[in-house]
Image 1 (cartoon, one colour):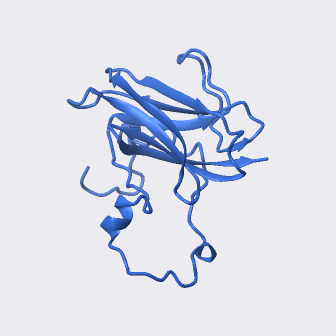
Image 2 (cartoon, rainbow, N blue to C red; image 1 turned 90 degrees about the vertical axis):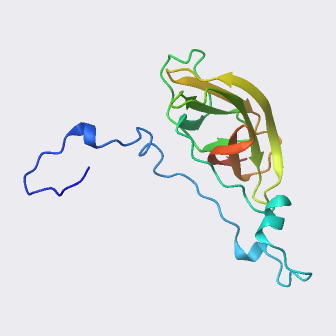
Image 3 (cartoon, one colour; image 1 turned 30 degrees about the vertical axis):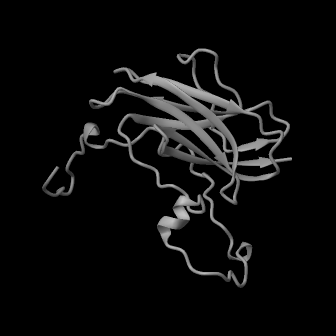
Length: 179
């Protein structure tokens, strides 16, 4: 789309390709480790970034996939994928029945088969829950893939959820669990 806009120029709607989920979670929680959580004198020999990644200390990068359309978290999912979704939420209580994670996938290129799994991490990057891999075949129309986990065994705090395609993070979100 080259060129420049002149005053009074009309912008065609098709030129503005914005994800419909862009503005749905303005208050999304981001996560960071507070400097006060780090030991004052770490001691020991230094490590390379590759070593830290291999030990699970660093968070794996999310790999962009055109097949991933959208993802979110809700307290309850409609039984049928065609039914309207409730608004996304990032706040859950330990008393809630479940945290439901859903994602929409659609075949966009040659890739059509793979495995979807997930992991839930605490702020220390420790795995708190896992979802075993499930083989799927992507279709030309969006397909909803979802899973749920119980928040009751988790301590109050912020948790990271990584949705994995063939073992690599394809999407990431954060949820807050309260009493």
